[in-house]
Image (tube, rainbow, N blue to C red; front, side, top):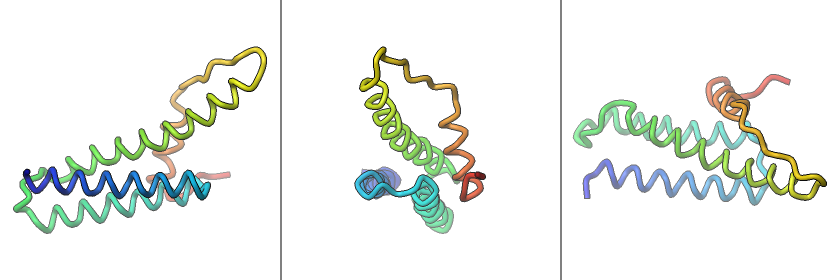
Length: 114
């Protein structure tokens, strides 16, 4: 196994556990996303300092960012689907891009304006 694959697998396990804790403890989105960013930034820093991993700078961070966003989105979609299924008539859960914007904004700014 290549070292970059091991690093990616380890970080995905960390992100899965962070997501699990976030759902179980009902963490605020800002807390969860800031924690994800800390993990991704630390991983990126490690890779930049250890070039022997043969990973292009930032490439793994992008993959892990998408992975963490998909985890977060899936939890929110499950919640929205459950809410909609309990109503009559059933409503379609829309993906208008707002959730992506919301996640990206918190990731980049640390908090969402109220």
